[in-house]
Image 1 (cartoon, rainbow, N blue to C red):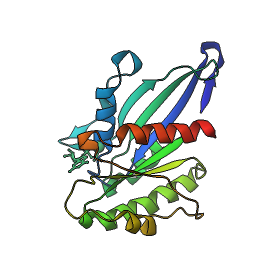
Image 2: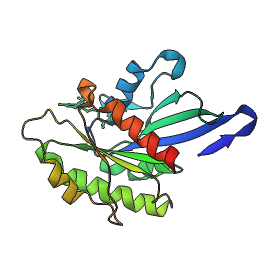
Image 3: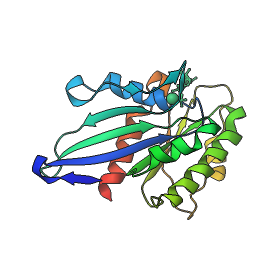
Length: 190
Ligand SMILES: Nc1nc2c(ncn2[C@@H]2O[C@H](COP(=O)(O)OP(=O)(O)O)[C@@H](O)[C@H]2O)c(=O)[nH]1
Ligand SMILES: [Mg+2]
């Protein structure tokens, strides 16, 4: 988080992390569609190959004033494919908060877990292990979604802290705004 005093701006970086195709880009797309153009940028997607994000997506959102400052929030997504581990780390650097977008499809459980572990490894390496994390359980509309309790058991905070959960269907714009509001609230509380 950086304050640019002469412009009275507060810069905040939020990263959406998770396995491939869990719905990270869809979250940003829905936010873009639902925030008035004067309060946001266009969604910039770098080097996409069909549906897949190869580098990252970026959306900037300007919020109302907080304590005389104008918050400017930069939202990033990471590419989920295993071979882009290094890119994920680069994008994660300097994050003020992280949203982990999990895929509720039952056959994706192991991938969620592997990415969750990698996220914490990278957060420790980058010394951002204490920034707020929100766990979004996306795709709750799929058949036989992984139960919330099973996610809670599997995706644990390394220090045993409670991780707030939002159930979502990003595709249908359910839980997207709530997730964004919750991570921002946690960041600003800090
Ligand atoms: N069934 C279902 N599909 C979703 C949901 N959210 C996203 N998707 C789909 O999942 C696919 C991957 O989404 P995308 O946002 O590109 O994933 P990313 O790789 O995490 O950025 C797309 O076909 C989306 O339409 C959801 O809530 N339910
Ligand atoms: Mg993507």
